[in-house]
Amino acid sequence: MSLLIKNGTIVTADGQTKADIYCEGEQITRIGKDLEAPPNATVVDATGKYVFPGFIDPHVHVYLPFMGTFAKDDYISASKAALVGGTTTLIEMICQGRDSRPLTDGFEFWMSQAVGKSACDFTFHQSVTRYDAQVEADLKEIVKAGVASFKVFLAYKGAFGITDEELYHTMRLAKQLGVIVTAHCENADLVLELQRQLLSEGKTGPEYHYWSRPPRVEAEGVHHLLTFAEMTGAHTYIVHTSCEEALNEALAGKARGLNVWVETLIQYLLLDKSYAELPNFEGAKYVMSPPLRDKKNQEVFWNALKQRFVATVATDHAPFDFKGQKDMGRDDFTKIPNGIPSLEDRVNLLYTYGVTTGRLDLQTFVDCASTQAAKLFGLFPRKGTITVGSDADLVVYDPNYRGTISAKTHHLNLDYSAFEGWEIKGRPSVVTVRGEIAVRDGQFVGIIGRGQFLKREPTHF
Ligand code: URP
Ligand code: ZN
Ligand code: ZN
Image 1: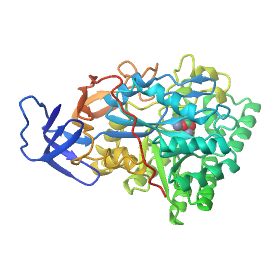
Image 2 (image 1 turned 60 degrees about the vertical axis):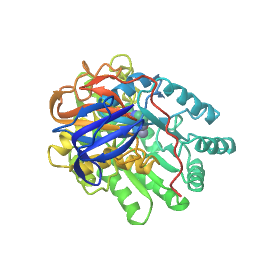
Image 3 (image 1 turned 180 degrees about the vertical axis):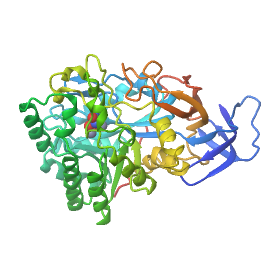
């Protein structure tokens, strides 16, 4: 199996150059001008196109039992959609409920959902939803099996949320094992009390979701987490950061020397809270946590990305149908399953509204959509860059493509798109996973089940 990608502009987080890329087996073996290939090699002409490293989405839910229902995608639909959109590696959150045990069964179950179904490569963040001696032993096993990141929820009390005592022990263990702790930061008690208050006032529509989780509630979550990071020395990664107040808490943590990194989502960069205020319950399509914010936050995050204060742009893909799932909360916003799916569209949206508008240069685009995730989560330089020895995960990207996003054409198993009708300027024309072509011109041509579990070593000591 050999592949030659000719005449493209190779873009990495460090720079760009015009050259050919030759791949033998699953890796890149040569990069240079006018490379020759054997007659049986597959040749892709990338003239006028960019060649990016495969994109990495570091925050995805595929199998997700949540709020009385299950997320709609499975690894077949999710990985096809990811690949068509240029994402060649996804990192899923293993989210077992607080009462399910042992954790190792949860890990094996999540793995069984992906193996044999995923067309793209995958790995997991292991949620810690309670803490005791058995959990500690299980976590050590799971880390040995190749999962080098934990996930904690300060929100969702009674479901995934943990107590402060549990948080402390989780973070101490993480520090000892060199594991980074990814965290959903919102003050769970405040959310519960605000929800009760709003419902008691008859405020039941999707637009009130925002008021049950205002910016200060998220900022308090970040502040809280970082106090524990300071006491334990654990390295932390704040997922789905949505507002300036929360970002400032994270930056204050960085300023006092903490090892903290910030993730934002494509949804927060492009959508604002007015979407959740749409009439006729349409707003439910835009309910997620933390909620969509005031538009003024968007410029703050674009600038923070440009300055590299924000490390990654993810999706927190959490797909629930509008009919039959989101409408479980028609009379009570607290029952609307939280999530705005965007796994298929993240890269094209970030390119269109980040790069073509001049908000991000190409290097920053690659960095925040691929390289940083690889570096933070122990995948670099196997993933996240284009160099000899890296996996041949490549995205030949056509900047001249013009199209619109629609649920009618997406590969997700979902009855709506939060970005219905949005214009995109550019899309992957060829996507490869470890040297095999998986996408051509928006069509999935890959192999279901070829995706591999990526074993990772801890690096956050
Ligand atoms: O609304 C969201 N974010 N849904 C998915 C679960 C989570 O909190 O990441
Ligand atoms: Zn979350
Ligand atoms: Zn999530």
